[in-house]
Image 1 (cartoon, helix red, strand yellow):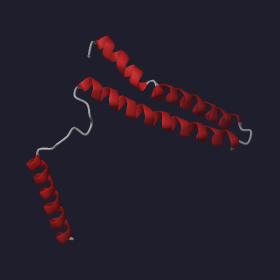
Image 2: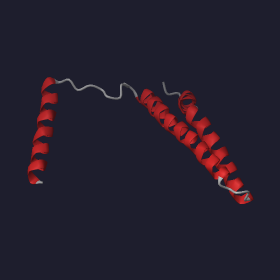
Image 3: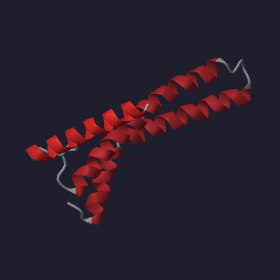
Image 4: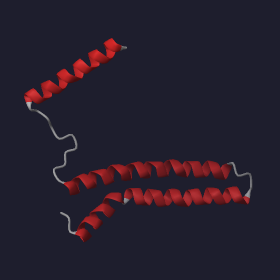
Length: 108
């Protein structure tokens, strides 16, 4: 265990030294200011929320199919479906919402 830990520490140290020696540290995010960073984060989170909304539509369908006529379980399935549709809408509109807020605040 100690050999593995020592070897990994040495390897990461050498890699860090090599990247500093060459001076080729690049920007992995690709944004130069805070507003573009916010837009990229909102886009990524929006895609994640929209994907989860699509999965929740399937879950709501399973809730409905397994309700066996119970009005309470059908109500749960309808609520899940409504929340999933709202989540997809918010997920798809996430970057637009951030742009609107930036325009209201005055950020460029």
